[in-house]
Amino acid sequence: MDEIVKGIIKDEHVLVVAVNCTETVEKARLIHDTWPTASAAMGRVIAGSLLLASTLKDRQKVMIQIKGDGPLQEIVAESDWLYRVRAYVRRPHIYMGLKGEKIDVGRAVGKGFLNVIRDLGLREYYQSSVELQTGEIATDLAYYLNISEQIPSAVSLGVFVETDNSVKAAGGFMIQTMPETTPQIIDFLERKLSHSPSASYMIRQGMSPTQMLEEAVGLPIEVLQQSHVTFYCPCSKDRVINALITLGKEEIGKMIEEGEIVQIECYFCKKKYQLNIDELKNILRDL
Ligand code: ZN
Image (cartoon, rainbow, N blue to C red):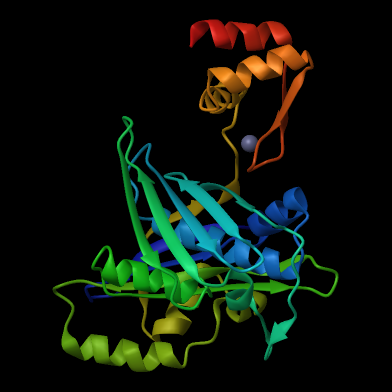
């Protein structure tokens, strides 16, 4: 079962978050029919967005968008404050082979940017970008947190894809220090984390998110919050109409002239919405 755990290292000023999102990533793989490299990249971005969501307040959302010059082109995952996540990858049919024992996500992403868009509610958005460091996602997200949010952070993200292409493990963890964290514990964590097993390995061993954190940092964890993680897309016909409006009068006019039913597919969940001529005319009239 997919879950996320947020806590602190017992008696220390260190925030820790870990997530197992295996079922969620497998669901996203089935929706988008992703091949292994695309599954791994999308799964890491999903896990990353869930880790970032651990900092959200009620009704807020966070989106990670990776734009690279590699064959995957674009990967997006959005999670809300209840850890309901949705995702897509622009080019799902990508398999690039292995780099050592790992799926070569870095080469499939290429050079580019990582954007984080925080929806703070009440139409207030906050966007920040960093250049991709490796395209492996975890190092890029850690770089973003360190540089852009100025929170010293370590991030590990991992996806294990079985030979039948199904996702057998997906998740990650994030360790963040605070101004009050002692130099001794920072030194200890740096040494410990450099030898930590990967998140996907720990999930395959059957470890819970709390056990993953205790294994990674080598210290007991005090759990502050434990929540379910689900794949969920809040799309609706109204939202599709809002997206259509951004195309402008001319484009909608052209659709009406062509006189056919317009079918629009949600990027995130592939649900199809149909708009007939009368609906299009109504939209045009309201513009
Ligand atoms: Zn949708």
